[in-house]
Length: 239
Ligand SMILES: [Zn+2]
Image (cartoon, rainbow, N blue to C red):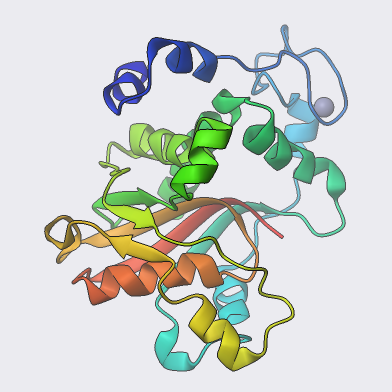
């Protein structure tokens, strides 16, 4: 795994940071050193109390709130857990996004791999993380979705590609836009750089949080238009 991360162009310092994770539970503060079933950053009690995963149909249905039926490109969607009013579990996502706890993203990637295997939903041959805009990546230093993808790929032994697509625009907030404007707004966010890589492939898109699903769906549409066979998605949380 370390080899892969270094191999995708991060320097040694990045690779070292990638391995740093807190040794206490980010939810309850309990030390996790001596807890063999912990994740380092989540004690086994909080891990077991994690909110239940949502149903795929529920996630896909959210898309019909803002999209025409023809524009729904995702076939299936999984999240490890749902956060609604449970702010504690949302803390985990904030940590992996903003506090440089890169290992959390990778470990959740492994968990997603395990979950997909249990669901017998591993019939895809390429994993594509949702890219962030290059300016944002420079600012943050990493894209958390890349690390989640690395975890899924390592667990399932299915390749991932960090460079096949590019985010060409920042997304505006979607909530106040009308339905038609929202449809326009999610088009043209992503550009597929090499369509040969995605042609005839079944693809898993990976991201940290599934909310309306429209950003993930927008990449799924681009992938289908570039010749992909089918697209499903996996995220750590749905909110
Ligand atoms: Zn805990």
